[in-house]
Length: 220
Image (cartoon, rainbow, N blue to C red; front, side):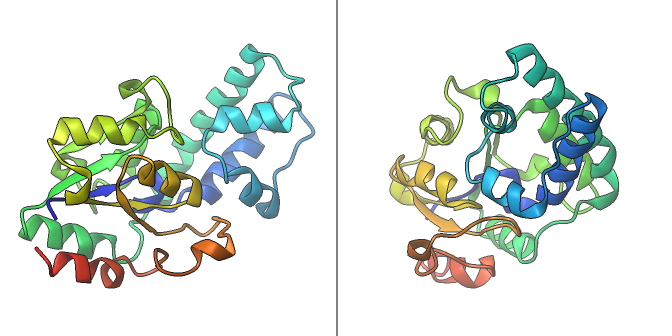
Protein backbone atom coordinates (compact mmCIF):
# COMPACT_ATOMS: atom_id res chain seq x y z
CA UNK A 1 0.00 0.00 0.00
CA UNK A 2 1.26 3.45 -0.95
CA UNK A 3 -1.39 5.84 0.35
CA UNK A 4 -4.20 6.52 2.81
CA UNK A 5 -6.93 8.83 1.57
CA UNK A 6 -9.19 10.50 4.11
CA UNK A 7 -12.34 11.08 2.13
CA UNK A 8 -14.41 13.71 3.92
CA UNK A 9 -14.21 16.36 6.62
CA UNK A 10 -16.10 13.96 8.88
CA UNK A 11 -13.28 11.42 8.76
CA UNK A 12 -11.00 13.88 10.55
CA UNK A 13 -13.36 15.85 12.77
CA UNK A 14 -16.95 15.56 13.97
CA UNK A 15 -18.89 18.55 12.61
CA UNK A 16 -22.46 17.29 12.19
CA UNK A 17 -23.83 18.86 15.37
CA UNK A 18 -22.20 22.20 14.57
CA UNK A 19 -23.61 22.03 11.05
CA UNK A 20 -27.08 21.23 12.37
CA UNK A 21 -27.00 24.16 14.77
CA UNK A 22 -25.76 26.45 11.99
CA UNK A 23 -28.59 25.44 9.65
CA UNK A 24 -31.19 26.15 12.33
CA UNK A 25 -29.71 29.59 13.04
CA UNK A 26 -29.81 30.38 9.32
CA UNK A 27 -33.44 29.28 9.05
CA UNK A 28 -34.37 31.51 11.96
CA UNK A 29 -32.58 34.51 10.45
CA UNK A 30 -34.48 34.29 7.15
CA UNK A 31 -37.81 33.75 8.87
CA UNK A 32 -38.37 30.08 8.06
CA UNK A 33 -40.23 28.09 10.71
CA UNK A 34 -37.96 25.10 10.11
CA UNK A 35 -36.10 23.26 12.85
CA UNK A 36 -33.90 20.27 12.14
CA UNK A 37 -33.65 18.10 15.22
CA UNK A 38 -31.01 15.39 15.51
CA UNK A 39 -33.20 12.64 14.09
CA UNK A 40 -34.17 14.76 11.08
CA UNK A 41 -30.59 15.76 10.42
CA UNK A 42 -29.39 12.15 10.60
CA UNK A 43 -31.77 11.33 7.75
CA UNK A 44 -30.84 14.41 5.73
CA UNK A 45 -27.08 13.78 5.78
CA UNK A 46 -27.37 10.38 4.17
CA UNK A 47 -26.88 12.39 0.96
CA UNK A 48 -23.97 14.85 0.72
CA UNK A 49 -24.48 18.52 -0.12
CA UNK A 50 -25.91 21.26 2.11
CA UNK A 51 -27.75 23.15 -0.63
CA UNK A 52 -29.24 19.89 -1.92
CA UNK A 53 -30.61 19.21 1.57
CA UNK A 54 -32.27 22.63 1.72
CA UNK A 55 -33.78 22.19 -1.75
CA UNK A 56 -35.12 18.71 -1.01
CA UNK A 57 -36.51 19.70 2.38
CA UNK A 58 -38.32 22.67 0.83
CA UNK A 59 -39.88 20.31 -1.72
CA UNK A 60 -38.61 22.70 -4.41
CA UNK A 61 -40.54 25.65 -2.96
CA UNK A 62 -37.44 27.82 -2.55
CA UNK A 63 -35.69 29.57 -5.43
CA UNK A 64 -32.01 28.98 -6.15
CA UNK A 65 -31.02 32.46 -4.83
CA UNK A 66 -32.97 31.79 -1.62
CA UNK A 67 -31.24 28.43 -1.17
CA UNK A 68 -27.81 29.99 -1.79
CA UNK A 69 -28.54 32.75 0.71
CA UNK A 70 -29.60 30.30 3.43
CA UNK A 71 -26.53 28.16 2.80
CA UNK A 72 -24.24 31.21 2.92
CA UNK A 73 -25.76 32.22 6.26
CA UNK A 74 -25.26 28.66 7.52
CA UNK A 75 -21.59 28.86 6.56
CA UNK A 76 -21.24 32.15 8.47
CA UNK A 77 -22.70 30.66 11.63
CA UNK A 78 -20.58 27.53 11.19
CA UNK A 79 -17.46 29.71 10.93
CA UNK A 80 -18.27 31.25 14.30
CA UNK A 81 -18.73 27.87 15.99
CA UNK A 82 -15.76 26.00 14.50
CA UNK A 83 -12.76 27.65 16.23
CA UNK A 84 -14.02 26.69 19.69
CA UNK A 85 -15.31 23.17 19.19
CA UNK A 86 -13.24 21.14 16.75
CA UNK A 87 -11.22 18.10 17.80
CA UNK A 88 -9.61 15.31 15.81
CA UNK A 89 -11.61 12.11 15.99
CA UNK A 90 -10.15 9.29 18.12
CA UNK A 91 -7.33 7.25 16.49
CA UNK A 92 -7.00 9.64 13.51
CA UNK A 93 -3.73 11.16 14.75
CA UNK A 94 -2.33 7.67 15.37
CA UNK A 95 -3.04 6.61 11.78
CA UNK A 96 -1.56 9.80 10.35
CA UNK A 97 1.60 9.43 12.46
CA UNK A 98 1.99 5.84 11.26
CA UNK A 99 1.53 6.88 7.64
CA UNK A 100 4.13 9.64 7.94
CA UNK A 101 6.61 7.29 9.58
CA UNK A 102 6.05 4.72 6.81
CA UNK A 103 6.35 7.47 4.17
CA UNK A 104 2.92 6.79 2.76
CA UNK A 105 1.17 9.42 0.70
CA UNK A 106 -1.71 11.11 2.48
CA UNK A 107 -4.78 12.61 0.83
CA UNK A 108 -7.71 14.64 2.11
CA UNK A 109 -10.16 13.98 -0.70
CA UNK A 110 -13.26 16.12 -0.23
CA UNK A 111 -15.74 17.89 -2.47
CA UNK A 112 -16.53 20.53 0.10
CA UNK A 113 -15.94 24.25 -0.47
CA UNK A 114 -12.58 26.00 -0.20
CA UNK A 115 -14.00 28.10 2.64
CA UNK A 116 -14.95 24.97 4.59
CA UNK A 117 -11.44 23.58 4.21
CA UNK A 118 -10.03 26.86 5.49
CA UNK A 119 -12.37 26.73 8.49
CA UNK A 120 -11.37 23.17 9.34
CA UNK A 121 -7.71 24.03 8.90
CA UNK A 122 -8.05 26.95 11.33
CA UNK A 123 -10.08 24.88 13.79
CA UNK A 124 -7.56 22.05 14.10
CA UNK A 125 -4.29 23.90 13.46
CA UNK A 126 -3.02 23.20 16.99
CA UNK A 127 -3.67 19.48 16.51
CA UNK A 128 -2.93 18.86 12.82
CA UNK A 129 -1.32 20.82 10.00
CA UNK A 130 -3.12 20.12 6.73
CA UNK A 131 0.16 20.73 4.91
CA UNK A 132 1.16 17.17 5.82
CA UNK A 133 -1.30 15.96 3.18
CA UNK A 134 0.13 15.41 -0.28
CA UNK A 135 -3.22 16.42 -1.77
CA UNK A 136 -6.22 18.33 -0.41
CA UNK A 137 -9.18 18.61 -2.77
CA UNK A 138 -12.34 20.71 -2.88
CA UNK A 139 -15.43 20.97 -5.04
CA UNK A 140 -13.52 23.25 -7.41
CA UNK A 141 -11.38 20.29 -8.54
CA UNK A 142 -14.26 18.44 -10.20
CA UNK A 143 -17.37 19.02 -12.27
CA UNK A 144 -19.42 16.48 -10.28
CA UNK A 145 -19.21 16.37 -6.47
CA UNK A 146 -19.63 13.23 -4.40
CA UNK A 147 -21.30 10.76 -4.61
CA UNK A 148 -19.89 10.78 -8.16
CA UNK A 149 -16.46 9.01 -8.13
CA UNK A 150 -14.79 11.74 -10.22
CA UNK A 151 -12.94 13.20 -7.23
CA UNK A 152 -11.24 9.88 -6.51
CA UNK A 153 -10.28 9.43 -10.14
CA UNK A 154 -8.80 12.93 -9.98
CA UNK A 155 -6.90 12.11 -6.77
CA UNK A 156 -5.44 8.88 -8.15
CA UNK A 157 -4.17 10.74 -11.19
CA UNK A 158 -2.69 13.63 -9.19
CA UNK A 159 -0.99 11.32 -6.69
CA UNK A 160 0.11 8.87 -9.42
CA UNK A 161 -1.54 5.93 -7.70
CA UNK A 162 -3.30 2.81 -8.89
CA UNK A 163 -6.52 1.93 -7.02
CA UNK A 164 -5.08 -1.26 -5.53
CA UNK A 165 -2.25 0.68 -3.88
CA UNK A 166 -4.41 2.99 -1.78
CA UNK A 167 -7.02 2.66 0.92
CA UNK A 168 -9.79 5.19 1.59
CA UNK A 169 -11.46 6.20 4.83
CA UNK A 170 -15.02 7.52 4.47
CA UNK A 171 -17.68 8.52 7.00
CA UNK A 172 -20.97 7.59 5.30
CA UNK A 173 -22.15 4.63 3.22
CA UNK A 174 -22.87 6.93 0.25
CA UNK A 175 -19.32 8.28 0.25
CA UNK A 176 -17.96 4.78 0.76
CA UNK A 177 -19.78 3.72 -2.41
CA UNK A 178 -18.25 6.71 -4.19
CA UNK A 179 -14.75 5.41 -3.40
CA UNK A 180 -15.69 1.83 -4.29
CA UNK A 181 -17.00 3.00 -7.66
CA UNK A 182 -13.53 4.37 -8.37
CA UNK A 183 -12.08 0.89 -7.71
CA UNK A 184 -10.75 1.73 -4.25
CA UNK A 185 -10.91 -0.29 -1.06
CA UNK A 186 -12.70 1.79 1.56
CA UNK A 187 -13.07 1.57 5.33
CA UNK A 188 -16.27 3.04 6.78
CA UNK A 189 -15.47 5.24 9.78
CA UNK A 190 -18.92 6.69 10.56
CA UNK A 191 -19.57 9.89 12.43
CA UNK A 192 -21.95 10.30 15.35
CA UNK A 193 -24.91 11.08 13.08
CA UNK A 194 -24.30 8.56 10.30
CA UNK A 195 -27.09 6.08 9.64
CA UNK A 196 -25.58 2.66 8.95
CA UNK A 197 -27.63 0.08 7.03
CA UNK A 198 -27.33 -3.53 8.28
CA UNK A 199 -25.25 -4.59 5.28
CA UNK A 200 -22.58 -2.02 6.23
CA UNK A 201 -22.25 -3.05 9.86
CA UNK A 202 -19.62 -5.71 9.30
CA UNK A 203 -16.36 -6.15 7.39
CA UNK A 204 -15.67 -2.54 6.38
CA UNK A 205 -17.06 -0.63 9.39
CA UNK A 206 -14.97 0.54 12.33
CA UNK A 207 -14.99 3.06 15.15
CA UNK A 208 -11.29 2.45 15.84
CA UNK A 209 -9.47 3.42 12.69
CA UNK A 210 -6.02 2.21 13.75
CA UNK A 211 -7.29 -1.26 14.63
CA UNK A 212 -9.01 -1.60 11.26
CA UNK A 213 -6.10 -0.30 9.20
CA UNK A 214 -3.32 -2.04 11.13
CA UNK A 215 -3.47 -5.30 9.10
CA UNK A 216 -3.19 -3.27 5.90
CA UNK A 217 -0.35 -1.17 7.28
CA UNK A 218 1.61 -4.25 8.37
CA UNK A 219 1.67 -5.39 4.75
CA UNK A 220 3.78 -2.39 3.74
